[in-house]
Image 1: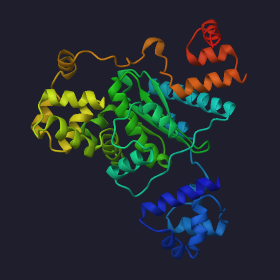
Image 2 (image 1 turned 60 degrees about the vertical axis):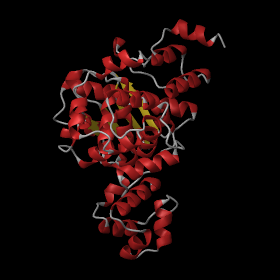
Image 3 (image 1 turned 90 degrees about the vertical axis):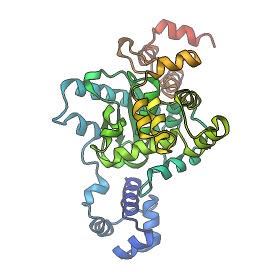
Image 4 (image 1 turned 180 degrees about the vertical axis):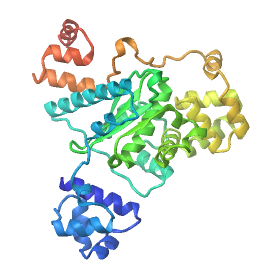
Length: 365
C-alpha cells in the first residue's frame, strides 16, 4: 500500500510539471521525505498525506483505496449489453487463473515504469531503449509485452460486441492485463497490443479502458478521449521507428515517392498492419493525403500475395471460442503441474488439450 501511495503521488506531481523540491516546498515537507515517499520507502503520516492530497486536489482515499475493483466498475456499466458482460466475466476468470498460476509458481511479473508528463513519440523512443530494441522490427510483441509486465490474453470476440481491446490494472494485485480480440487480423492484433501497452505505461491508475475498433481510424479517433490518440501515436512509433524507416527507404528504395509495391515491400519487412504502416508513411510525408485515402481502398492482401507470394501468418483461433494461449501462460501451467500445484485434469483444462495427450507429451521428455 505504501508503494501505491508513492506511485500515485509521483504520477500527479509529474503531470503538474513539478519537481520533488517544488512539491516539498508547497506542502512544507523535505524533498528527501518526498523522494523516499515516492520510492515506497517511507510511510506518510495522516497529516502529511492530508497536506499532499489537498495540494494535488485529491481526496486522501484516492491514495490509499481502489475506489471500485476494476472489473466491477466495467461490468456494472449501464451501457453494456449482456454479451459484453459475459465476455468481461470470461476475461476476469482468465486473469484470475493467470494470477493463481503466478502465485503457485512464485513467478509474479514485475511492472514496467509508470510514465507521466511525456509525449507519445518520446515515450515510444524511451521504451524501445529500455527494452533494448534499437531500431529493429519487434519479432514477437506479445511475448515482449508479457516480459514487461503486461499479461496478454487473446480471445475471439464477435463483431456485434465491437471491441478491439481492453486494458485493466488490478491495483490491489499490482497486475496489468490486456484483452486482445483474436478475431482481428494477426497484424491488427499487434497494433492493438501496442495500443494497450501505452495505456499500461501511462494510464494504469486511471481505471479500466475498453477500446473499440474505431479508435484505429484517423477520422474517428478525435471523437474519443485524448488518451486514445496518445496511445495510437505511441503504438505507431513503437512498432515503426521513423528513423529506421527513413533509413530503410533511403538506402534500399532510394525514392521519396512510394508506389503500392514499395509500400507492400516495407510492410513485409516490418510485419505490421497495413493501416498502421500507411498512417506512419503519411505522417512522414512519404505518401500524400490523397494517396493515403486511395490506399485504404486497395485490396492489398490479394495484391501482396500475388506479388510476393503467400506467407505463413498465424491464423486467429476461433474454434470453440478458446483463447489463444501465450507462451508464458503455457509455461506457468506446466510449471504448476510439475510442482504438483495443479492436477493433470486442471492443466489439460487450462491448455485446452486432452488430459491423456498432455500426459503423453510430457512423458516424451
